[in-house]
Image 1 (cartoon, helix red, strand yellow):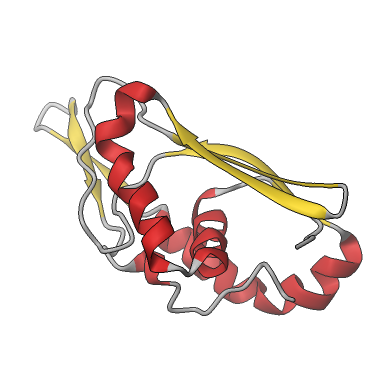
Image 2 (cartoon, rainbow, N blue to C red):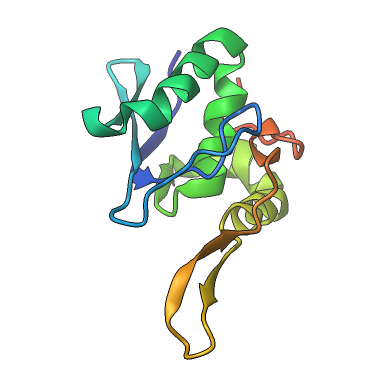
Length: 146
């Protein structure tokens, strides 16, 4: 199908679609990358990660395939983690604008991390306050309106 949406972003996930924690190292950002673009009457979605991060994201990729809920799953990933997304203006006004409060709620919920500091103010780790079930799309967001 064709959807007038364009996205290119990279982000890390704290949880998979089943609410399982994804354990990241403190040494580097272990991102998942997503690109969505329309071309010749179809819309393509590329989801990727570095080979060295396969142990983190392989299960997530399997979940995306087995859940058979791709439009909803992709919508919540985009709403929660992508800060730069393009919708054709008439498409935005028709399908997306009415969801703006829910989109903001999901984005804020997914970005709720704090840094842990020791008594001297040195960084000793991060703490995610993101709910483990946030990828369940409880707001019923839909970026793919038809």
